[in-house]
Amino acid sequence: MSSEVTAPEQVILRAKLTELVQEHRDLDAAIDAMNDAPDIMQLTRLKKKKLALKDQIAKIENQLLPDIIA
Image (cartoon, rainbow, N blue to C red):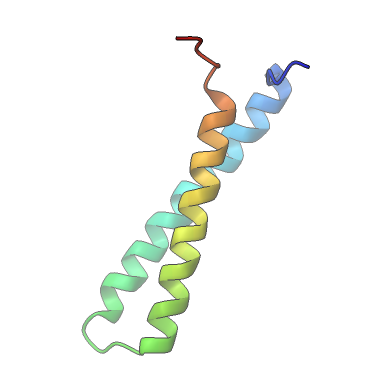
């Protein structure tokens, strides 16, 4: 069973990756802005969302990288 990503799939994954990375940066900025007057519940939600985005980014990056047999 091949898990190689086709060229069209790579284009879609790279576009999604760009979108997720930007959203991750935006959350970073929002979290930094909240540090002055933190709403603990909102800050916690933002941090959880940021972590979920990081996981999605890692998953897509793993799909785009070819398998290397050591």
